[in-house]
Amino acid sequence: MKYKTEEQAMEHVRLGERFINKTFDSFRDNKRVVLEAVGIKGYALNGASDKLKDDKQVVLKAVKNYGYAIQFASDRLKADKEVAYWALKENIGSTAFFHKSLLQEIGELDPMKFLESFMLRNKLEKSLETKQDNKDRNKKA
Image 1 (spheres, rainbow, N blue to C red):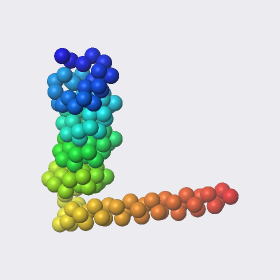
Image 2: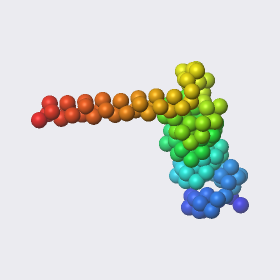
Image 3: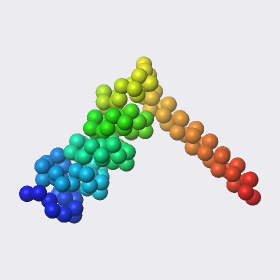
Image 4: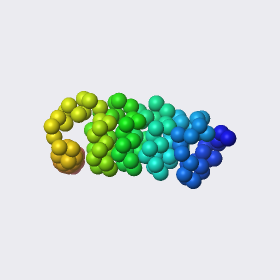
């Protein structure tokens, strides 16, 4: 049986049906259904269309749920530091699926050091953005 409506597909995803099942063929490119599926089981990214495997919102949701889901992401997102950070945070073994370019950049860094450096950089960037926003507001006042 193939699902005919988005709601029918969503209901079966919520009931735990495996998204890689052929019954979902017509919904592999449906972002709403795929987001629901990867939110429940990150592994469901395996059944998504190539387009959605290259959608950062979808991939982030999948890797936050199941770090190893990065293996199903597009090469572009396997090299994305934010995606890598969340995959690594969920499962340290996910580094095995990072893009070569990212692995080269990380180099000999311990994966936990990569996590720390990413968090520090994000804090610094947010701090700089806040300072710039404050300067901009002061100029307008």
